[in-house]
Length: 186
Image 1 (cartoon, rainbow, N blue to C red):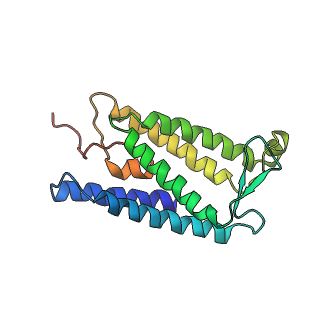
Image 2: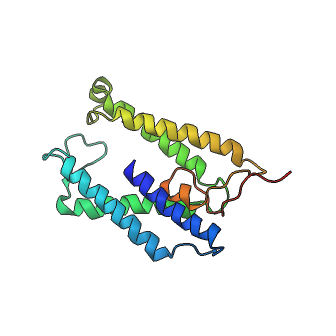
């Protein structure tokens, strides 16, 4: 949630400058990237501090339940790369209105299912997945993301009535690189 809101604030600052200063460039690209790296770095370090010692820097290898890759201190730059890369991938994918919202919905739906399965000890044991206590909250968040995306998709159907710019695309909540516009005057 902290990363989502932080990246959303970076996008909001960019959109705000575009609208209030009538500057089509908004925030410089390097400034946005540096702030995203700082937010992701803080979150990655927070994850390392809060995680149990035995798994804090291990990466589970898919389909191999007992194989872990110990990343050590490389975990922090790896996590930063994944968070910033995923956020900017959505931002770059959305060249047309609504282009990235369907992949975001599909990914969030898959993550919701995975979070639910690994959060339930019976299903995790049966499917030979690593049990992650408390991941049910993540499943709820992902399901809410799917629902919000469906609501947005309804209003983004031609003729599009809602555009959110970088505020949504950087936070992966609602991707669109278009400048903010409100409902058309009729």
